[in-house]
Amino acid sequence: MKNIYAIGVGLIGGSLTKDIKTHFPDVVVHGISRKDTTIEQALSLGLIDKKATLDDLQHADLVIVSIPVDATVKLLPSILDNISDNTLVIDAGSTKEAICKIVENHPKRRNFLAAHPIAGTEYSGPGAAISGLFEGKTNIICEVEKTAFKLQEKALEIFKALGMRIRYMNPEAHDKHIAYVSHLSHISSFMLGKTVIDKEKNERDIFDMAGSGFASTVRLAKSSPEMWTPIFKQNKENVIETLEEYINNLTQFKKLMESDDFEGVFKEMKDTNHIKDILNGIN
Ligand code: NAP
Image (cartoon, rainbow, N blue to C red; front, side, top):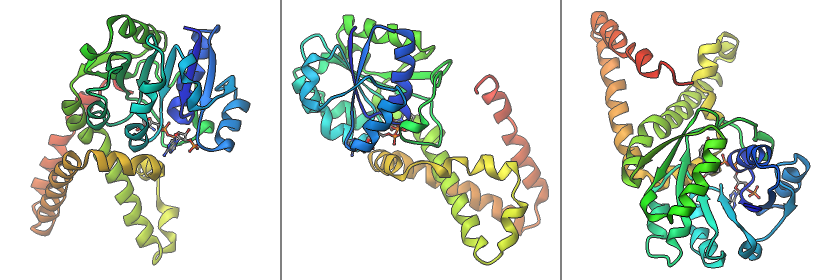
């Protein structure tokens, strides 16, 4: 593995190339992005070694695609059209069904590995890239049997070097489960932030009272709408289902309050404390 082409050099693409450059010092990382300012920033931060374009992909041993999921769906077929027979293409998109579907009959399907590293922060762009982001984190691989065995091995070598734990899943199951543990949390955080911002217009002191609980609960509301809108669009049905269940729970909680059923309120919270055991060991 000598020439790596990173399409997208933001938080995920940049963190991947940063770690790959550390663990595989002989590689040359070529960066591809839409905006010159983004690629210049990635170069100056040392996330990539050289600028490249999509026309250069025939020289790639590995292509890493870390751009918004709608852009991945648009670009992935032409990326596969342009690579050599031995190139491995990995994507990092937060949805997997539409991405796997768009290349299901592509002649180079066996060169592609669909992945979702469950790691990130609320920040975006090359400046957000950090070392060790993937250490100890889960990387979900979908439809592994559709990737050529030799290329699977190449991908696993990289994921192992970066410290990732691998889980295998089909794209439908991935999108269904991730709607609960990631997509709903983001919507919940965005709407909690909105509720407080709307209120703050009338009560200016409210932010003086906001403590660390508020800050940690609305952290995800700082996330990029450019990245999240396409995710919600691609996973619309699953996300709506999670929202319906969440709204039902909020309504039920409100009803308990309205009817002075504080034993019920206590029980709801006590039952949910079980989340401590579920999250134990997850950082
Ligand atoms: P990011 O920091 O905003 O970086 C996005 C990169 O994609 C930038 O290089 C940007 O370049 C490029 N880009 C943006 N829109 C594009 C478009 N329409 N066409 C082509 N390139 C475009 O985003 P990220 O957090 O790294 O996310 C990248 C991918 O990783 C997404 O598919 C996301 O679902 C997935 N992911 C994210 C997280 C997370 O927590 N953030 C976690 C796991 C997976 P320009 O500035 O040049 O436009």
